[in-house]
Image 1 (cartoon, helix red, strand yellow):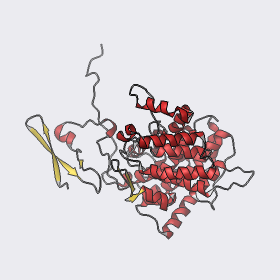
Image 2: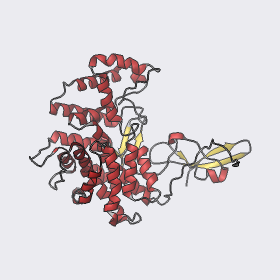
Image 3: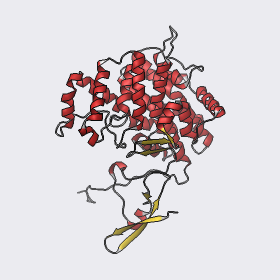
Image 4: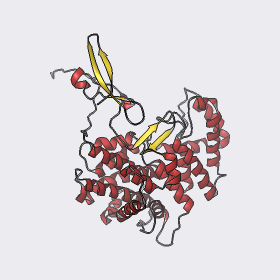
Length: 425
């Protein structure tokens, strides 16, 4: 029961009491579930900027203070003290694993890392120059046709198996998207390699020689995966939940999330950072582009600065900034023109009054795109890696939604502005 109520006055002689619910952190919310029935009215909130669509225990964000917590743990601590598999277990199970739990989880994921050979043949139906995200949407959606032995979403064990399969097979599917595009043979996962190392091995290894992945690059990729693993009720996560509310199978739901993530306003931000830097071309051109960014009448926008949620420094960006320097030092490319432009833009954003006043701090996408390109990953694979990472969060959010006692099919309302009833003549 709610301790407090909000009173909604409608016209002069109607008043409704709406319960105020308080979570463990964040703003309280006004419960309007009975508003339609009691007042014959709906609320209007394009973009759902003031609407809580669900109750969740997974991720909390305080954009004003620059805080991101997974199950209560700060993202900075997870990214520097734990690996991606620890973080995945935390998101799925609610607690960090002990040694025995971690071993069991790693064995489960390792067991499911290969894909059905029919899926490998499935890639032959795609054009070589198809965008990797287009391939990923199709392949992940098709998993339900190959693994239909665990599609009873009312069965907790089926949900667990489906979640394990998605998390385990996503690196294999992502690497296959890349190999298909460049015309190289697929590399199968190896059980003696960790999750992140296996992904890099399948991306860059070839059958004709042994491939050893640099520990620094494994750590950098692992941090990228951790920092993108979940981010509360964003567009793609909300898409997964909405699709899942209809009872759709988990593979279809995750495929829907990948489709949403593909949008340039969501998962394509780090790719846009690289395109922007390439368009600027030289560090000497930066002052001109800074002035363009400050000009309200100029359509140019600096990509990788500011965030819709964070009105302070993106906590993920702090970790990614350090990782960016470490990777570029490891690869010996710190003197590259691209990095020089990035660092000059960073310096200006942290010192210029215009950027400080508008809180346009460098975000996680600003640094991750630079890291991925330095590692030799093409820009069209950036969002694929984002999807690989975010699958853990999507699975956790989907599973939480399915098991919620008050779960109902999503059905947003609308403000209708079209023609009223009329007759055909």
